[in-house]
Image (cartoon, rainbow, N blue to C red; front, top):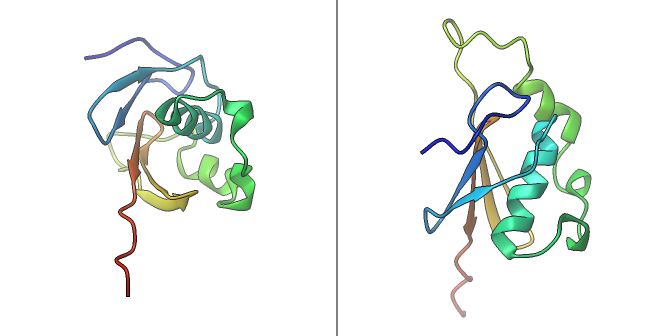
Length: 108
């Protein structure tokens, strides 16, 4: 199911909770790809997101986890999970970003 290649050296797609693939723009940095995935999941432009990513997670630290000098033959990517405005964002690699709606909290 590859949809292209990006600067991070892999397939350029995102899996969403409904397993719908979203083709994204050319992304040089993982944080940019995360923002694009969130915006695509919500059906809005990335500039329409109300909370900057840096208020939720450190973009430089996220980028460092998926650095370009990563050696897939000897290392495995960590998985990072965080909440963003009611969605769960799971980054399992620079080209493996999943956005899932978080279930509402049950009424007390």
